[in-house]
Length: 189
Image (cartoon, rainbow, N blue to C red; front, side):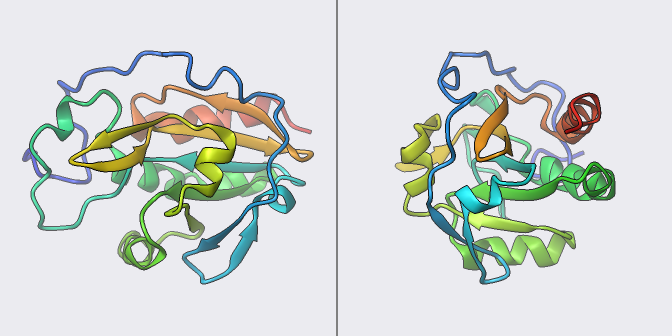
């Protein structure tokens, strides 16, 4: 594995710790904010939350062939967006069997995200929160890297219009979809 391999996670990454930045989220009503998906569809988050929905939030996906930026691997929880997305893709059938819809979410533009959907052959849509409307409304944790504000990695389980469960911090990201499937199987509605 090379350091610039987007599909694998180096063994020596720092493990993120729970800084309490998501404690306020469980039980919150999902706001009526509309985000654009990679299918060029407008998704009202409050309406999506009426049924059980997984929204896995991640900082950003890398570009194939581009070097991973210096310092990225030193940020706890930053590395692993592509492996996490592939894991949700690989567990998508199980998630649907659990009567759950799935969305990825990042602050990258829809155009950027569409490349990822095509390259990784994703059966679900990714939502763009490039203007931080959803992020700010829920006070989701963020960090800055090279002058760009990015989401910290977390997953929201939405149901009945509210945030039912929050996974934060998420590590390792490539095993996270399995964790979500296991939780959903135990907590079927």
